[in-house]
Length: 158
Image 1 (spheres, one colour):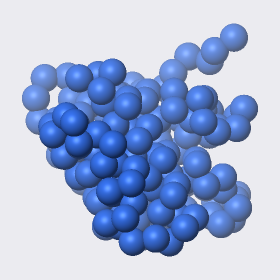
Image 2 (cartoon, helix red, strand yellow):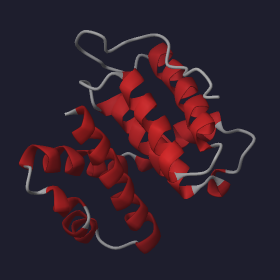
Image 3 (tube, rainbow, N blue to C red):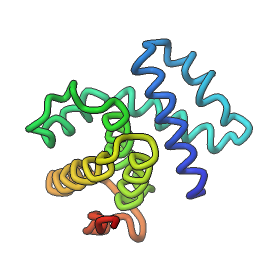
Image 4 (cartoon, rainbow, N blue to C red):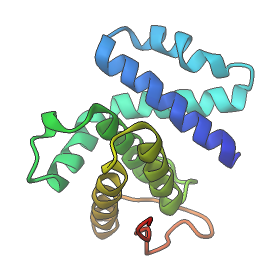
């Protein structure tokens, strides 16, 4: 399912981007973008759940991001970066079966593919800081083996 999870995250990124820019209804975005995954009901349901959870928790998650980007105006952050951060933070808090390291590594890879040259480092820094805060505050509920690794920082790519 790991390849599928990447495809799900990318599809959710596309859907959230369309939602952010078009302000179309959630149902329309689900049907037109996420709906392409309906051939595989399990994959579609996970994508739909992630898409809806990111929308539902947007204000809460945006506060976590804002607290980590003190030197930037939140509105000036790249839209793709904001969405990638929202998806990953949502996974950290609300998807108990996804290891934090996986969520963060996927966010970094997606940022490399879809955003600016420096987005991967930016996303990594923000998510690592948010992860530390979530651990300290006890807001992250992960269950199962390997779900609470301590280090998420990636080695720089040369």
